[in-house]
Image 1 (cartoon, rainbow, N blue to C red):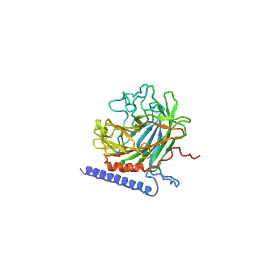
Image 2: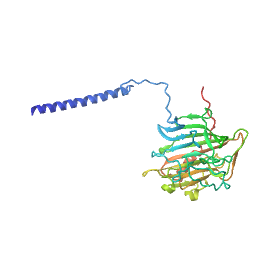
Image 3: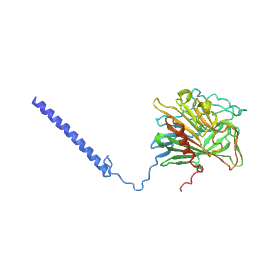
Image 4: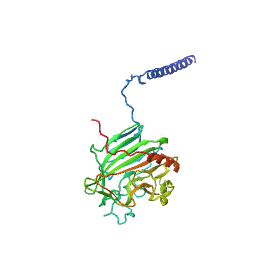
Length: 369
């Protein structure tokens, strides 16, 4: 009995000693950190010339992609591979950590094809079998000199090709925003360039987990020729919402700046902005507000919106637009990605912020030699 008590007492003494040693080691490890040494025991080296690290970065990735990140969290990714019919942005991350957009229309995942020619009545285009052209957030148009850049294949389907040359390509990080400037060629089925497009996407965080994506476009005709956007409700910007946000599939809400709700009221009606919001998880709602800038030539523009979950802005719903040589067409569109289902007052306030932004030149900034 006595020996057992001695062994127990010795065990407790050893355990207490281990605890004291561990505590002492923790205090010793903490002290160097306060005096300029790293917590792992290695001394740190000061960097007197260190520059601030940008909060917002756009990072080149493999497989022809670029990631826009805020403090290491990806907000969206730009896809621009040569095999694509057009570049696009996916995902569009909401505050709940899920994409607020998707690829393709629910229930109709087939490849969309053109007919042999543009429809006789541009205001009533044929409905495609398949909606593969609806790629999250994208730029395209159904009729450019008779070529269809909206669909993914067929006799008159064109391709928007990202240019990989150094001219017109620029990545910019920043403390408040990051941007990517690119140059695209709009090519007909034979590979002839019908139009040049300079595109800049700028991403910036906003309050409450919301964020902005501003898309600047400049369309230019090739030297010595004109280019015409034909009359159509399709183009130049489209957004395919997540299935759960759509009115039909998820019970979401469509609201525009005129107070019109749903497809029946808002389809092809002029507005400053249109908001599409709905459930993204069982506990969270979120949405995207698509905005038309007052400097655009047909502001307030008609919005094309459907209860099945897509929205876009129409440039040529009422008639064609022709771009003459040396007279480029400049456009700006905004996407405000937000939590919850905001009311009209809040959305008007955010549009005012967007509308007050100045249009900046679309040419690249000269690089330092």
